[in-house]
Length: 310
Image 1: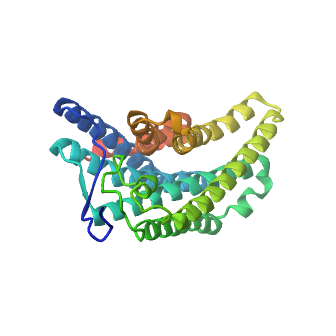
Image 2: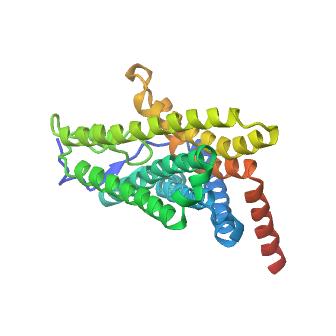
Image 3: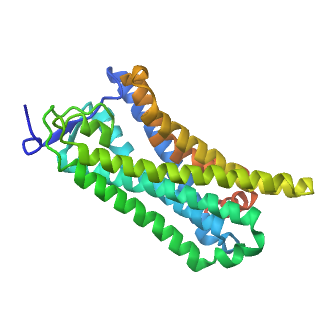
């Protein structure tokens, strides 16, 4: 039996057993990471450099791109390193840091998606009040609240999780450090505080989810009443990217944590964790750029300007 004071490192779950598959996973993760870095980097640059994109919708999209970059840069580099060098070690401090930053960025992303839903609701259902309620100061305050909430959530969970005594070895059944897998190593009856924190977080997550469902119900009712086909198409084109991103993010993460224990297996758990932690940051820029003509035009101008300068 070991305790947390004697643990100097954790063993992460290997992505593959054979050397060839490890190198293949390294190449796949490298490709996904580069796609996420390029896509989110272009969105951040386009929104920052294009004056006509300085609107609430694109301001929150810029923040979402920052959260996506942060989350994928927290988990994937260590997984790539372990696949390339055929190792599974992560230090105790490194695991705590990885858990904190992953929770920080993933929590901030969820709150930002909720705020973006409110932005779409106000734009379509309350257009006369949109400019008043979503001014630059209000947008900055909402974005700051999302980041601050993510920071507080990450700090509480990380501090509480790593204050628990760990008595069941140091092997994590995940390719990155995550609260449920660390709790499995803790002594029996010693993680009730963390379960309470998780329950509190689940309530806030469910509250945001109910708000998004209600908002989209109101949005679709308002869109159906728009008299012109062009007006309905424009309204849908601003909502569908956000709805697609929310669906991808929530469906994969909810299924990962709420699936029946009878369905649990190492390969399925690994595939689901990749789906909700690695894939969305790479797909989100593609989803938004495909549907937003303004964003596509700004990205195109940005890339043409870069090529001309070189």
